[in-house]
Length: 473
Image 1 (cartoon, rainbow, N blue to C red):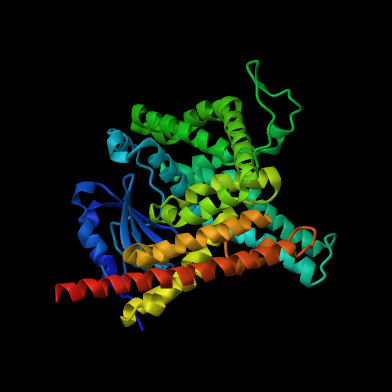
Image 2: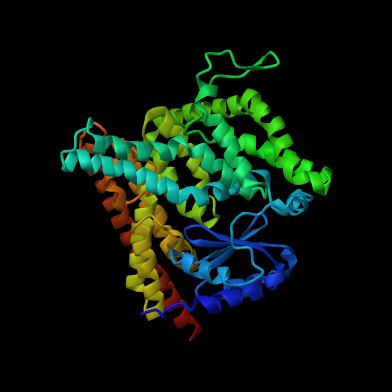
C-alpha cells in the first residue's frame, strides 16, 4: 500500500523548485493540478519539480506551472495557504505583470496552443459548478423516473431551477474566470457577464441603441463565446487605464471608464459575433457527426488522453455547450470522452495487474478508480505516459468504444462527469431508458477493450524486454 502523502513536505519542495516564496506570484488549483504563477520563470527547476514524491508530473504551459497531483490537490493547496507571502486567493490583478507576459509571443507557444490553453484554464475553475449543476439535472431524472415525482410539482420545479441557474448564469462564471486567467479584474468580468444576461436588454423589442447604433437583441444565457470575446477586450482596456491614470484616480475611474468602453462594444459588436461563432461551430460539428458518426466519436475517444496530457481537455467545454444549446444533448464530445475515460480505467487496471512493484500497483489501481469517476489525470500522467503500453491500450479502447457510441447514436443529456457515476445523465428526458443501456454498453466495452489491449501490449513489452536481457547476457 502506498505511503500517505506529506503535503507540508511537498509544499516546501515545490516552493524550493519554484525559486522560493519570493518568486511565487500566485497559487491556485483545479480538480487535479496545483497551478503556480512565477515572477521569474527562469528560476524554475523543472527536473526538481518533476521528481518530488507525490507529484505525477509538471506541465509548463503558457507561463503557468501545473503540478499534477490528483484529486487530493486541495489538501496540498491548504498547505500553501498557511505560508505568509504567497497569494493563494486565486485572483491576480496586476496589469504590469500581465503586460510583461505578453511582450514576447514566443514565450506563449503557438497561437492555437495559447488559445486552447486559455480556454482550458478558463473553464477549469468552473468545473465544480458545471458538475454540480449538471448532476442536478440527473437528480431530476431520478426523481421523475424512480421516485414518481411529477413534473408539475414544486419539488421538481425547485431542482429544475437550480439546474437551469447553473447554465443560465454561465457567462458570469466564465467572465470571472477568464478575466482572472488574463490577470485582470475577475469581478469586472463577472459584471460584464451579468450585463449580457440582464433581462431588460434582451427583451427591449429592438428599440435599444447607442446614439442611433442598434443593440442586437440576443439571449446570451448558456453561451460562452460572447463573454470570452468581451473579457478579452476588457482585459486590454482595463490594463491601459490602470497604466495611464494617476494612482489617486485609478481605483474609481479605471473600472468606470473600462465598462463605459467595453460594455457597449461588447453588446453591439463582440457578443453578436461570439453568438454567431457558437451557432456556426455547432452547425459544423453536427455536420461532421452526421457525415461519419462512428469515425467522429472514435476520434474523440482515441485522442482524449493526449488532450488531458497537454492540459487541453477543458478547452472542449465550449464545444459541449454549443452542441447542448443547439440539439439538447451531446452525441459527440461527451460520448467520445466517456469511452476514453472508461478505456483509461481499463488500461490502468490492466497495468496494475501486470505491475510487480507494490507502490506502482497501488498508483495504477488508484488511477483506475479515479478514471472510473471521470478523473483521468492520475492515470494519464502516472500510468499511461510513464509506461507507454497502457496508453496504446487506452487509445484502442477509446476507438472501439467511441465507434460503438457513434454507431448506436448514444448521447449525454446534461454536461457533467463522463462516467457511470453520472448514469442519470444518459436517461432520455422522455423517460426512455434505451440511451442509458447504450451508454452502459459503451462504457463496458471501452473498459474491457482497454483492459485486454493493455494486457496484450504489456505482455509484448515484457517479452521484448526479456529477449533484450537474454541477448545482453
